[in-house]
Image 1: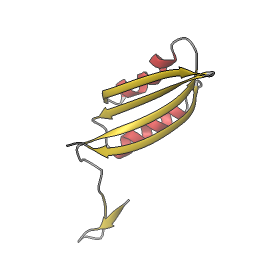
Image 2: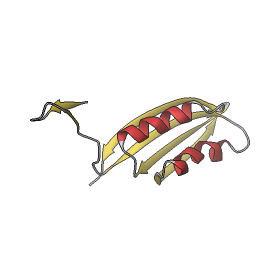
Image 3: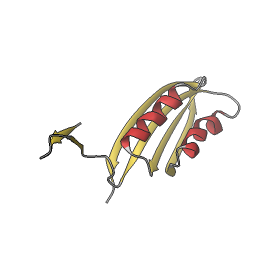
Image 4: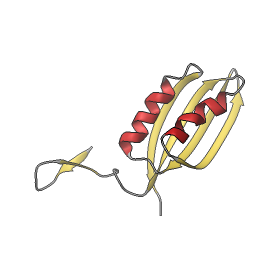
Length: 98
């Protein structure tokens, strides 16, 4: 998570830095599933920079890159997504932007 700084507190390298959070969401296919997945992003004030949704088998794979979220808010959002009935899996990543 981080390294110790002079005052002994932890420092999170990704907190507050410019970058994108990447969410990989697997969901069952159904009416309005994409809108249900996107709802929590709006509530958290995330800006969607890139979105890809692919149907296959019995489900939908959704890849979102978002800006405007701290690591804590991104993790909270991932938990909210996992709580949705249509969602079968969520992965969260981070990458720096130039």
